[in-house]
Length: 342
Image (cartoon, rainbow, N blue to C red; front, side, top):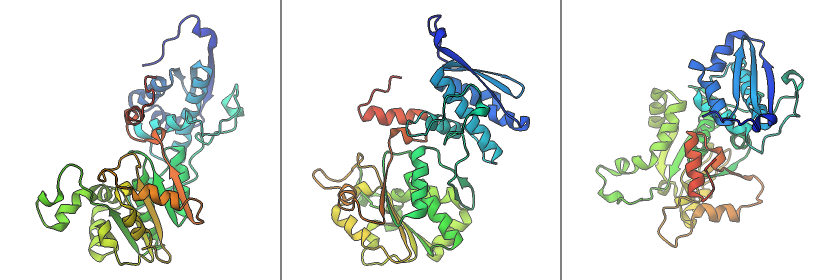
């Protein structure tokens, strides 16, 4: 709901005006039934009124400035040809409120201000057969730059931050451009309350449920027939980490998901599979370990041992980087013991 302002509060309110040049995309800017405007009002506690190509924003100074930057960010992305949906709007709102974003000077007129990092179209993107993917948080932008640059990346943080999805997208992009010959996706098949031996089917059918998130990311970035064809030809391989033993993974983009559930020995084995002209991304949430009590997570052990090693980078995501429903970020924070009452 839009925040109510008492008579005393109104002395602290400001009004910002913003005008957009292209009236043809204002419908997309506002969203169906003005849902984008309503989302901004509800999240930031401001009031937005539109008259033609001009918008008037009323609210507390910081919130009004953030709302202006969100609107400008949406508009610039639409002008850049990007598709805007509710998730993108929520992501831009989250990025504007992120203290890591470089803020512009406080202007009286939007046309006189320098764009913030958020209001400008993203400079980094990943192109796949089905879509072009843009960062939806400040940390995602940093991660995507590292995915395109570094040989080995550790991506740490909670579910919903795009760790695995963006890694798969980057891998698919490099596969279709010929930068690598193979895409290898792996996860530890760790049981979480149900014994794998009691699951029906052969070995592939037993382990496929553990690898389903990797399949989902593939089908979201490649047409289904290409996924199937490339899996059959061996260009794409999806397998438990145990299948990596004894191999050298050259000319490949290699992703290990749910890496927090590897043992230290498994992690060492996996990392030493690294071959020439390859890239390796290790994703996991150190706070979601399903290993037996007392076992040391190979993810935490590797991050500590490899800190400062040239060619190895680490990206640490947090609850503020969750790009699912806004409630998911609050759930993560609640389980981490943070105050989420605001």
